[in-house]
Image 1 (cartoon, rainbow, N blue to C red):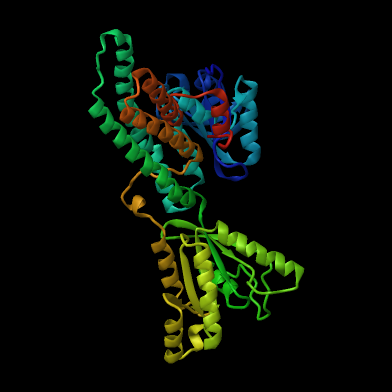
Image 2 (image 1 turned 180 degrees about the horizontal axis):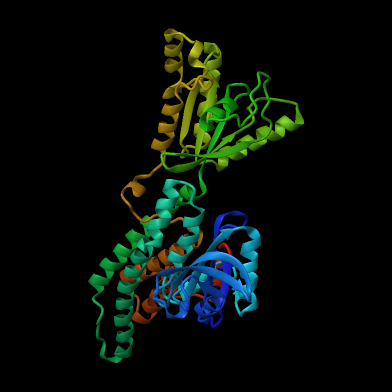
Length: 463
């Protein structure tokens, strides 16, 4: 896939603003910009300027001046795409933006496709495929954790790990392939003991990367937290307290929330999606019954469940609460569950002691006054495994990478089993080649037009 044309697109969000940036890339980018640029300095041609310089002037359409602009020049190969790139900073009027873009289209440019600037960067060797995908993740990151993961991947952390493993495996593959050429002499070029050590190391790294997807995927998309409990225990009040706004309707009438209400906040740099659910109870109301059914669905989908109960209930009812909590724990033994006693602001120390006696590991909270909300958010953070983030380890967030790692792991296990059973070199080579193929899929050594089309179709036009 080779591009010989010049593309243009708006690199900043569409709409009016203080400034906008229009980006051109391709072999004629500087020439087209220069033909329509009138510098404040007489006879100053953009084609004769050094790379990475900025120039003040006007974009003109014949004798008509469209706007006063700053033009940035980036000459190949030292640009984002690896081609000649021009970025024009103009005023943010939608009319001005479109006038300039239409002018360049008439002068030989073509509108860029989604993600085409980054696609050209990949094709010109400025980024590998996983780094290119990280660009999209960086743009969409809305909290510290997802930003940190995207930056780490864009800087090549994930790529370098995969590339190193692939290179070592490729070296052994070459030696085994060489053995096949000397099959009649029965020689062994690849040290099987060293090869086993390499396979063990690859297996360990692959397992770590695959396991990291469980954390990375939820951090990237926001960690879902379901708030459940009986009606009128303060679930909506808690959601409002967490969000610090009146997001959910609060009423003394039981069953006010009949559908799930969701909103996102960042806690400790990590995005959480809190879900206020319908109260769990027996009801003949058809609409409320549908809401309760959705509550159980949200428990299934959540990473963390908060079970809220009314601390003002009598001791007999607290025993029922304890039984309900055990039911949830038994049904989802691997899922973190936080148990919260709400409305404690009117209780005595003796009553609080009774609650602690009946229900273990309970958090005390008053959603109405805000008491205990900070302790709750700290408890939620403690449940999430962020050690890999703190240690700056590679975390996999991309489903395509995850799938390729799983397939590579399967092939590596075949190689491992083959070594243990004394499998012939020609059969070992087949499994090694398959593992190398899946490694190459991640970084882009192995690719096709359909794959690239699917990846870059999700980018914005100007990137």
